[in-house]
Image (cartoon, rainbow, N blue to C red; front, side):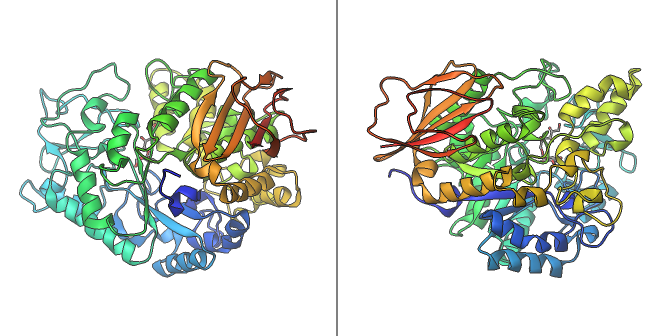
Length: 558
Ligand code: TEU
């Protein structure tokens, strides 16, 4: 085997969005004791790592991605003691815990920003990015990810501050070594508490181009070429590694909206910046419209999708480790987006899972995907919570459109789709809370819920459990080389995984039609055995067969 073994390569990571996982005290908001209550659930499913979305003190302009104190827990979620109990409960079950590190920006209510905005000669002024306006407007044309200018004017000192996200999320000035040191100290503090790593929020945005030049106005997120993968990003990540991470047995995954595969080699490679994995955005933006925005509908095609995955699978070979994900708290539900959330919900959810567990990379499961949760059928603006979606609806309203005009795109694209409460049962509020939930529960919880799924051996849940075991038991699924088959096939995604003399053949039908799969002649074997599949299969011959809607099969070839 040419690849080094690591626990985090073999791991299944389960992502928890605490606000929507389980509410233990009836205030309608998920919390940390609620997660601890479900530790046995996670153990039974068999996951190895939990990634917890931000739980730090926050005014919640962006659900915890606007942090006002990195070293305390948000009141709504509980106390530091609750968090310590959660960590212990997970560790007792051999589940590791990684925390979200959100350091491109803080909340405007963070002490550093409050001091920074006080006066131009505050000791904290240079912790953030302040500039004078130009011609009565902001310093440049950069936009925030949630719409509008990336600059907000602050009357007190008559200057603008930069925020690549909401105005309540001012960007830290990473060119200031003191800021970086404060971040490293904070990371150290959490590591000393015994956590097992970090998911690093938009970490490729921390370095901004010198002089903050205007961006190309037609390039999607205006300004991105000046802040995605900026001039010092590698220096800073490398420094973070050397100062904090080096020599510790932890895992890191950097969220990188702008990363190309070549940049990834630098972040991950043997002589690179020291990260273990990144989340790139290439496959989750395939269906963006022509203006490069999530709010215009485009189409994705399977050949294109395969090209993206194949590029990352093959080019990172020997140069870095992949992460396999199809959704998280920022994207629509994966079954609604890449599968079918109607007639073939169960089949397609299992098919997509088969892919996630058989690609070369660490598998990431977003809460609820293990029971095939779907997008939410939005009917009114009152149901929309997410700042990004609300801003979009508001912009459209100012252009004269009402909610019905944008309902479709909200249904397909709002981040809220992934944030509706976890569906534990068919009871009122899906067993998420005894109170009134902060965001509506998906009405399909009457049939789509954990109770039902755990009781039914044929469920998506049991299929996930099986895949988790299968990956633990078969190195070929973790470490095997990847080779694409049938490159141009518009319906079927098929690939081989090879490790020494072990081979696995993966065949996935991405459609509701019944294409025929024919194994290329040059793939020879003596025996074939079905390892897993989402339909009953008679016999063990993968030479040529008709696939049923959204069918997935994995064969062991010897
Ligand atoms: O997301 C980064 C990001 O760029 C997008 O996924 C973002 O949601 C999208 O561009 C909006 O249209 C991360 C977090 O995962 C997200 O929840 C936060 O809102 C964001 O950073 C800011 O911290």
